[in-house]
Image (tube, rainbow, N blue to C red):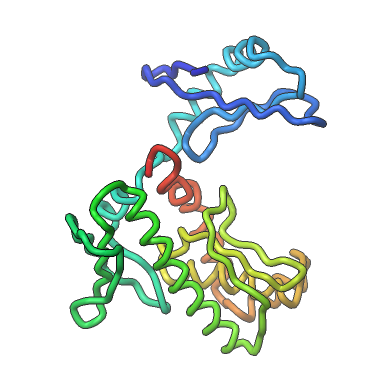
Length: 239
């Protein structure tokens, strides 16, 4: 099921029927697909009629949305990864037939990515491994600096969140944090570490985060401006 945009694209329509949903609602997913949230018994025909009524709005949203982009294309366009509070230049070695690996080269200023020759999935898995190593070290560093302890850390492919902190003191981070500038990566980490003390977004939480990151308002603004674009990197067919 597709919607034809005014520029001639066929945009997939993803229907999500859920018990308790009272009315039809349209949003754009991170693969720039149309997501129709619908009551459980809504037919495909009803969804299509609703989509057609929202043609003008959908074309406006599709026109504003950043493109979904593959990870390799992103790294060719923006060859940088963040780790340890620094920004490293990235070079991808094509045709590597050994086991996928990354290493630091040129005096530590370059991250050399060696995905085993094959599909883009190998590069994605390699960057995810890099992200797990980099974020594990950075969270440990910041927690030690602040005198905090956490129970566990996971680095995953969240659908839209940069991070979260559970009541059991487990922190989860989005691997795409390594695509951000170091100060924005640190902002997210410090945000989740602040939740170890304040499990909410109360005034006390923001006051604590202001201590952890005195420039948190600037960082929050910059992150909000970038999120829509970077959350679309490496999604679905974009690789």
